Length: 82
Image (cartoon, rainbow, N blue to C red; front, side, top):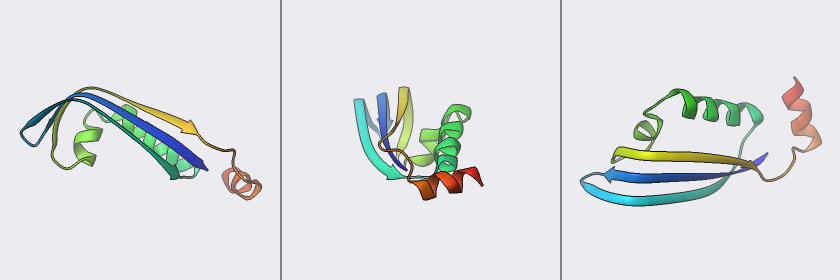
């Protein structure tokens, strides 16, 4: 299914540069399991962004919004059930 992600980050340190605010939006085609895994990692790993983004040294506040763009096709719905 297509998912829109929006990542908001405040008070960043990227390499040696301070950045007040960054907003990144993207759309990915992921299964329900992949979305669940990503959201679980986001919630459970305090340093998730530091591990994923090269050069990122510090983030003050951050939020990740996950929005489904379209319902799953019948074949995707069947896959999710099995």
